[in-house]
Image (cartoon, rainbow, N blue to C red; front, top):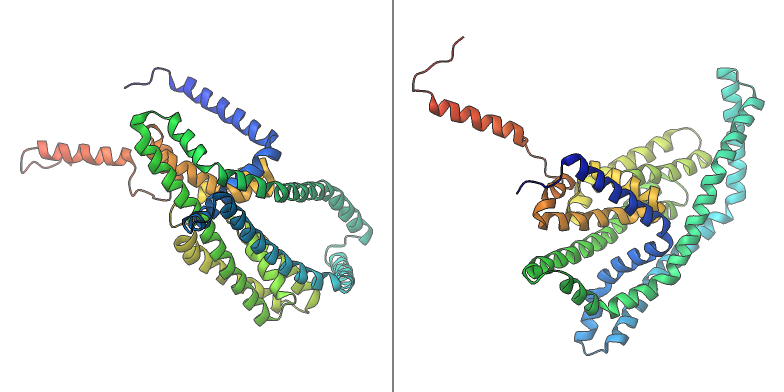
Length: 373
């Protein structure tokens, strides 16, 4: 059936809807970010809660026990990281002194090579520091927002698990009876995709943290365990995180080692680890259920960071994966689902149509007919 409204009008309405949707996401991020994390965490913990209920544990108690297990895991990880950070902070005065010495040598080298006075360099550094202050304030705001998420997350997760059947019943009631089968299939795929993504992410993080730590230990970089774990956490951010992860060990190697051999070894090791991660871990562990192409991944991560900060970067990939599952099940939105996916056709439809027309013309021509030269 032809569209009732012209393309330019439909495009304008869609753009206005996207602008309004983005405005709502940005201004209500304090409420929506904990809710989004709670939804994903509830889906991740749902199998354990169901298992306890099958063992005749009351529903409320099973949800509480499930949350306690999750909290103990997070507290254990936090305690381990805090001990590593404490070791690092004990050496901060020494590192600060070495950083100052290195900065002085660098300034002298710049003065010799480019003739720039140290006074001018200090002025540039002061201007750069003034420009970084807003970013530091934004980072502190993100940390405070993360603390808010920590307190609200268990409450929201408990309520989502407790009212799970009520929420699912509402979703089935919203759609017509003829669409019940499609709704059920979409919900199953969304649940499987999120669980697969979250479990895969945990497995990938453990493997990458282990590889990072072993590589830094072999090279001889200090604080290898802490840097390896931080690198794995940053690696959650597609494409951008890998670059950020290598900066920390490079900095530590620069202020604790002489020469550039250690830095080159760190870069080489992280390139190998990134290759293994991108070509083996991500395709087979993380992205086995829903595959999003690299272009969309980069754009959606940057958009998520612009709207919701670091939380948006983390949530953007599973969010776009859920959208792809929904788009693939709705005929009008299937082209958008194909655009998000990573299956690249050999020929586009315009080329296929031309090839079909050429083949049809060849069939019509009588046998033995030759093209004119």
